Image (cartoon, rainbow, N blue to C red; front, side, top):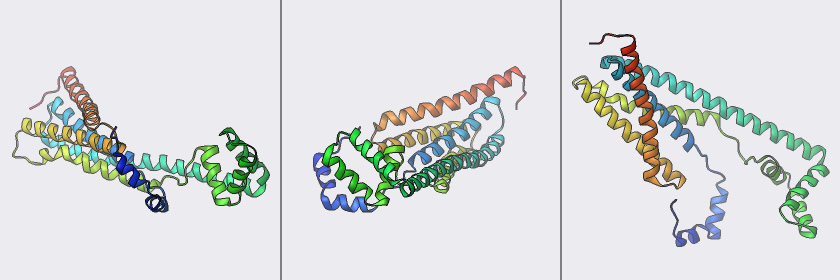
Length: 253
């Protein structure tokens, strides 16, 4: 994990810098959508390429199946991510409405919940009552505290359309790259596969590196881990297609 220099930490925690950062509100975190879409897109298309080579199919088959799977699987993944995010959003909104209703209808009961929450944190007597009074004086803050402390929810719900869009774009953008050598018809099949494998491996490694930079994790190790994951999926596709070709005695050529 990258350790920030103390001077940078001091600068980032100056009162003016803190005030400006907090005024912007929470940032949208779609890195997981991009990483998921990118890795799965690259795995999907390179697995098709590897399977086609393992089965002995011509390059044209790899291109057709690759692009067909690219857009179909990308759309499917985006829709799945949309539905998942939509469910989270609806759950968030339902809990928010329920807590708002409780604050409006049974404020004393909700105050007691605040009291017990902060009592469990070690506050007591006059200080505890001051905390309860301060929080419950503003219904917006009161609601946010109840969502966070009682239900473990943040201020904002996920945005399904953005999550789906990021997933689809990353899936298609990264998934297209292993297919590029097969668009160049002048190359021999073994050259196409070698270049495709190199490009796919590079993308796996870069995605792992970018993920590690965003999450402050070891860069090289994360890149290697993602590369091995993608390579294992491609190898599985290749050998499965190869063995099935042999089992069913499929003629190629």
